[in-house]
Length: 423
Image (cartoon, rainbow, N blue to C red; front, side, top):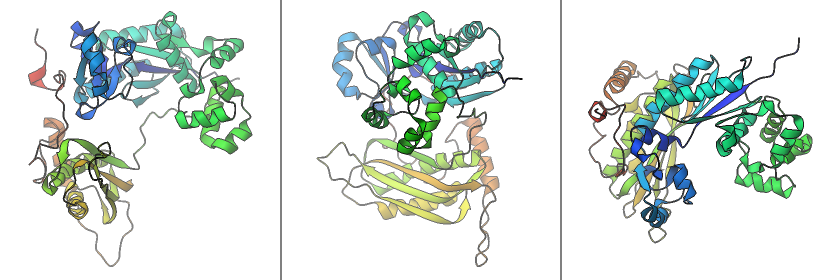
């Protein structure tokens, strides 16, 4: 009996951060809106009205101010608590349509609809339910592989005739060839600018060129990842649906400061916060780390200032997930790396050599150290119940000058009792 063709749907939220803001601000429906990155630096989300004005993704906000003032563009700071909560609501709604789904990012979800009849009608119903229940507009792209579902989703977004849904499987072979010949190879999932330039040097400029290229030559020149991408474009599934997110092999917690830091005490305060966040993620996946990597950065965009970007990786005597242990080592490393006379703009920590809890090579010359698992469990429980940062180490939170600048942030409508809209 022949195997039934796979039907994967990629559901992608439209202009997600802006859409989250508009749910609670319907008066902004026709207003050009952008959401800015950390410290209100660059544009990370744009409404369709802002896109029409020529504002680009990743563009520094100071470059947009003339256009913004002329056309009344509203700029908002990123409100990550709001966006994460709205994302959870969207993903929960989509989970009703299939037991097999993968939350790919904060605004994207793959849903396995294999064997589902009337896919187009179901996709429109899915869009309508997400819009009704959450207020977030989405588009649906359907294909036999993840890569083709991503391409189909792009078409669903760009072409009004699709009305937000496009099924690649409905096309004939001739229609597929014509469509892929019109699409630039850079639109393929995983094909970045550098690889696009290398492919163009070999005459591969469209998606159809990549799909029909000689496979052995492609693999020899670009490796197995590009070969898998080509096979995905040919309808052969090579990238599995990950229903459970794999455990991270590295965990990084870092941030650019709201203003430059010149004092070691302030840097240590910031590092304590980064350690707390990284170790909480480590414990959440039931893991421990045996390597920490601390780094400090000055502002590379200020070439008029002296530059200094030190880092140091330190293997720990024994793997741990204890925030207190990691914080002591990170505090020591910051003191060792710090040099006076520099304006530090960013710092962070990376946890590496991550293994499951309890897995470690025992040193027969040194007894195993006791870890504060019960204390960390209580700390995580309190912070989950009452909000992150409710319980923290004594070296954390003494200074606020380094905190991220969010001068335009909207209220946390769904995660703060004091910010719930009143009617």
